[in-house]
Length: 114
Length: 113
Image 1 (cartoon, one colour):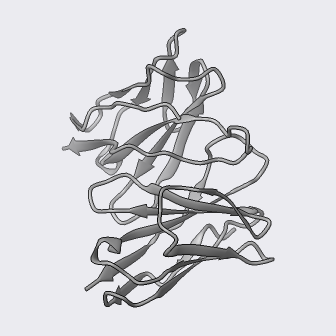
Image 2 (image 1 turned 90 degrees about the vertical axis):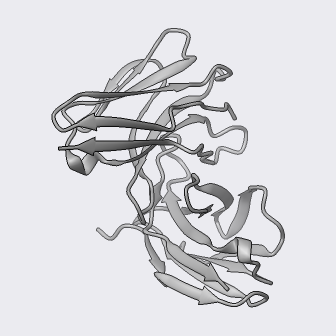
């Protein structure tokens, strides 16, 4: 049973560019959440998708957008990259109906903006 | 969502029991208490969750006093591989029914030989 997978593993972009990160949820899961983790900090919630719609959003600007596909996989898009966007981006999947707070995280995508 | 306070770091030795306490004074009635573990360059991993009293699984125990204003994660007989950051989270699904995790800075546990 495959867990949460993310691609790419690492990515280097230049300020002002756009980036797309991808996530495949754990088999059987229908909800995908995205988190940003800066070095030395805990993960910060970006947004969450269920049934192809954004259901919750954290305190992130509109430059951060996402999408969920019919097969439950998801993409995170970041436009007009800033140096401060350099971080580990984590995807987590869960079941819409299930025990509170048990989310399964992927290994993350390390984004470096130069 | 309730704010949590936990020690920034802890040190231990192999074979010892480690207890990490988390303070959550403004926990709400519907809030659950959940702990995650994170190794460097990996995503967090769910350890244990509880609402009140004591919960035990194959990895850890979670002790929650009657007033629920704090909780203690207990790791029995730690090994070097337990060196990680441990996060305490408090909250529920709220009116939306969706699970939003709010992480603090966590407790860095270092286990030495």
